[in-house]
Length: 477
Image 1: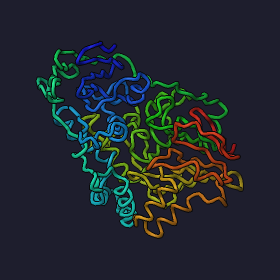
Image 2 (image 1 turned 180 degrees about the horizontal axis):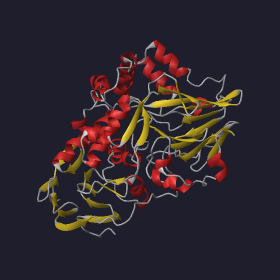
Image 3 (image 1 turned 45 degrees about the horizontal axis):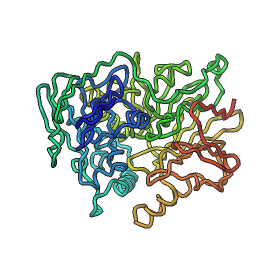
Image 4 (image 1 turned 120 degrees about the vertical axis):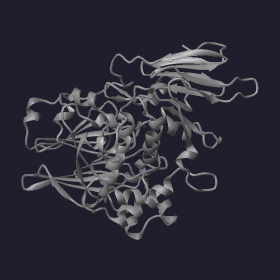
């Protein structure tokens, strides 16, 4: 693959992406779903520059899945600390939409933007200003910071460079004995990268993309399909975007004969097909937030009917901004792919005979968790899903910094009490600065399932389990 002793090396990673490595940096042409996992598996250099082809999507997969290569650049490569910017090359009109997409996924929407969303969507004003201000305080505190402690603006992290057909642009300037690295756009999906010599890149995608891991799941039986009383949840995936061995978070509930999806991970259609369903057969799709390991935006679109989307208005707004560059469409056109059902934090509602209540978890962008109650004869079964949320250690750090109101702090410290346990709880165990920690639940006697982690957790307490892709949990029949 790589050419020995050359100033430039080419790695044909997939049909939809090629990597070019030079002494000054690495260029990825085409950015399909979970490309970071593919590159980790192949042990190739990681990019700091991405070129978006004219084919923006193929076989239900986006070719502009920029988020995790960007995270790798920021947090693993320490690109910002080295005073470098992540570079994105695309057509000028796409650059503008990609900038909006990354703004709301990396930094989140701002307060004024959120408070206009309902009017823009033709909805009655129901969002709580108090709650939104609190969530904004949390996201700002968790945003990537410059050495002076101020949050980075998007343009300080990413350089968007227009690249039209016929254009030639410098990617890296010459440095000492190393020549300039440039890229020529020959047409929609054909490019030439030059670093001392020229190498051509042509993307010709002839078949659907494949994940680097095996999709797991047992097909739904006729008995289960016909049941109007079962309450169960299937785990499509419970890992994260930096784990190449497993799929990211996605959960399929069976509630009183209805199929309810929580989040849209990469290759969702494959997961659903594996079970014997289709996206069109889902009765509701809940979106917790718009990070790419929870929302591969192209996977949220059905083939023959609009998808029934349930989420908070500001999260739906961010969804639309994510869809616009991939379909090269307007905000209104993006709306046409969904039937939107607005839901609001701490406002319980009934759906399919069950009681749903979403709440704001504490995360880097607006994000939701879930409390769910389903009748079981004269009794009820209760389920808790933490959503992506902070560890107790980080909650204490934010509280010490004055980020939380007294009421918000109490809410976050009492979300899953040891008494009055739900029947089952799925909790964030991803650790780090913006995720939960397994240690937070060590003394909890509830039935705890750990999710959002690629770690192989050992020596778990009784009733505690590491959630696995393909696993089915029956809450009641």
